[in-house]
Image (cartoon, rainbow, N blue to C red; front, side):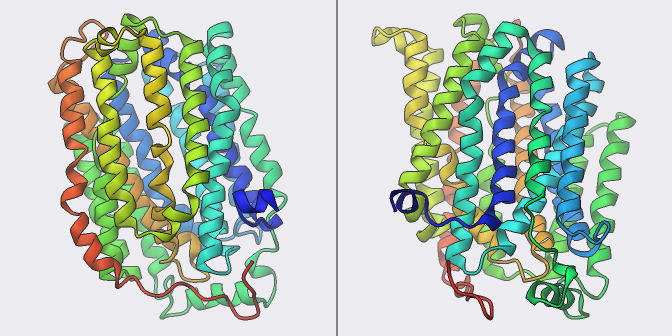
Length: 482
C-alpha cells in the first residue's frame, strides 16, 4: 500500500517500457568519461562540442521514421519487439567502437550517431508501448511518470560510479561497461506482450483503422512520413559530408518545415499546435555548453569523482522532486508547469553564475560546497516539465498509430534541442570561450540566463488554447481503469 501510494499502480505490461527508460538513464554512466574524452583525448572546443551535439540531436527529430516503420512495417511479424532489439544492437555497436578504436573527431561523431540512433529507436518503441498499454489518460500519466522515475533511477544507479570509474580507469573502460546496457534492453524486449497483428483483437483492429483511407496512416500518409524523414536525413549527411557552409542552419530549417508539414497532413488541432510551439520554444533556449565544465575542471579543480557526486545528487533529487510533485504536475495545465519551472530555473541559475564571479568566497564557502548546494537546490526542476509535455503529446496519438503520432510530435520537441545546441554554438563562438581563454564565460552565462526567460512571452497564448484540448481519453471497450 505504501509503495502504491508513493509510486502509483504497476502492471507487468509496463516492464519493457520502464526497463528501456532505466537503461537510457543508466547510460549517464558515460557522462563524466565523455566530458574528459572530449576535453583531453579529442581536444574539442566548447563550440565544437555544441556542433557535434547538434548532429547528435537530429536522430531524435527523425523519430517519425521509426514510428511509422514500427506501426506499419513489422519485422518478421513484430511491430515492437523487433525494433526494440534493433535499437539495442545499434547502441551496442556504437559503445563497442568508443571503447576500442575511436581516436578522431569524425570517428567519434560516427560512433556517437550509432549510440544515439540506437537509443532513439528504443525510445520510439517505449513511447509507443507507453501509449499502447494505457487504458485511460490517468493511466497514461502514470506510465509516463513511472517512465521518468525509471530513467532517474537509472541515472542514480550510476551517477557517482561513473565518475569513480572514469577517474580510476579512464574513459574507454567506462564505454565498454555501458555496452552492457543494450543487452538489458534486449531482455526487456522478451516481456513485450502479444503483437497487435497477431490476432483479431482490439489492438489489431486499431492498426487496421489507422491504415484505412481516412485513418492517420492511410491514403499514403505512412509513405509520406517515411519519405520525408529519410530525405532530410540524407540531406543532413550530404551537407556534413561535403562541408557545405551553414549546413546546420539549413538542416534545422528544412527539418522544422518538413515536420510541420507532416503534422498538418496527419491532422493537428490548433490547441495542440500552439502547445507544441510553446514547448518548442521552451526547449530551444540555448545553454552555456561545455565551457563551464571545462572551466570548473581547470580553474576549480573539480575531478571525476566530484563531478560524479554532483551527477548522483542531481539524479537523486530529481527523482525526489518527481515523486513529491507527481500528482500536481500531471493534473495542472502545461502552461502552469512551464511558467514556474522557467522562473524558478532562472532564479536558481544565479548561484552558478555567482560561482564564476567568486560568490562562494563572499560567503566564506569552498567552491565544491557551493556547487553541491546549488545542485541540490536546482536539481528537482530538471524533470518536472517533462511529464505534462509527454502526456500532452500522448493525448494526440490515435489507437493503432501510437508510434507514428507520438514520434512526429516528439521529433518536433527533439528538434528544439538541436536548435538549442545551435544557439549554444553561436554563443560560444561569439564570446570566444575556449580551454585557453575563459574570460568571457561569465558574460555568456548572463546572456544565457536572460534568454531562458523568453518562453514566458508566449505562455498566455498557450493558456488561452488549453481549454480546447479536448476531454480525457475514455477507457477502451472492454477495459477497466487500472
